[in-house]
Length: 443
Ligand code: GDP
Image 1 (cartoon, rainbow, N blue to C red):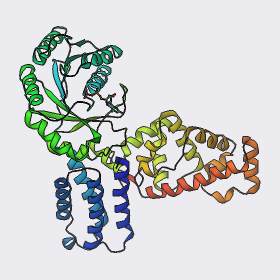
Image 2: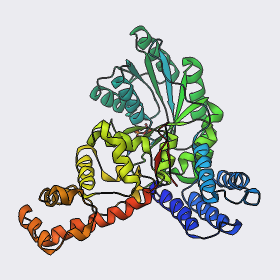
Image 3: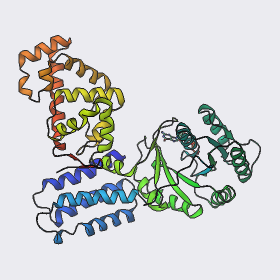
Image 4: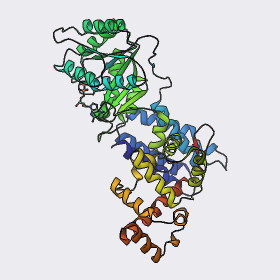
């Protein structure tokens, strides 16, 4: 089950609970059971899911809640809090400092994406002004050095390795020394992986760590490994002091729940996720916005960022207020399409809105379709664009808009249908309030 699907199922369970008139033990259990099933099917480990369920029941003690308490909200908040807790071990990962050289060692099974991720990590920091250096201490896999060399060359990052030396510890130490002399402030050591966890891999890792004394050990995990995630992550943690996790291949059809398990097993935060093979397909991982989006609760800080692309700063508050009051106009739909053409897929925008998840995005919203809608809207009058009353679009107006835009009547009808759908979606956001800290709250 991909993460969007997991989010969809959790959101659905919460929505189902919204529809019952009285929230009692039974309604809450049904909701929690559905969430439990969804998490288990996404490969979150059984013990974690069990713990989460127990904790939520403890937090939401229905019998002791006085009448008047918004039980639904309390349950939703508890689910949100527990999911965040699963992903947040409570302490941040070591962050490299520019003042002194930081050594970061990458570990993981072969094929997890270690070598690719080393370069992505170096490239990301290089863009932030660091001076990285890449050391290939993977002497086990033939071609590992060539791969690192190729990636590093592409990104113009200095690298160190050897075709002849077979001792990874020696290479690691030499590489680290070299880059220290060259005044690199971020020295990244790629280590060997094996097909499965085996004693020799762990011993080699321990020796490289002992010799190079890394400030941070990053465990790289393929998101598709499923229920094995917990044991695998724990095995690595027991051998070396893993301080952070990077989950790769989140772009595929992998079950994403392994991320939750890896955090629990290593007690270390996920710091980045890999979303493709290319250098810049690499995203900083933030727990709260991630869980908010997963649950369809929206991410107002992200939404505000996106709004900045399309709405002038002084009008943003008014814009949000309009959405929150359900006054969604044709012009606002136009603005969003514009934003989406400028800044990326529409589902990102949708997923930032409370009550919606990326999954709920209308299907087939391709770029050409959006452009066609916009052409139609270009032929509307200001009055039509600012109205939120579809009845104003009578037959003669529809024919006029079709003629004006050089499209057929069916195209105009499609835009109106689309507007109706979006208005319905946005009605979920009614009552949304932005708090001072940028968080959101909804009634
Ligand atoms: P290593 O053996 O752990 O060093 O793994 P590699 O870095 O060689 O990666 C194994 C394969 O996974 C390569 O084909 C990579 O291009 C691919 N890969 C790595 N990260 C990602 C990712 O985030 N998304 C996708 N789709 N492929 C990835």
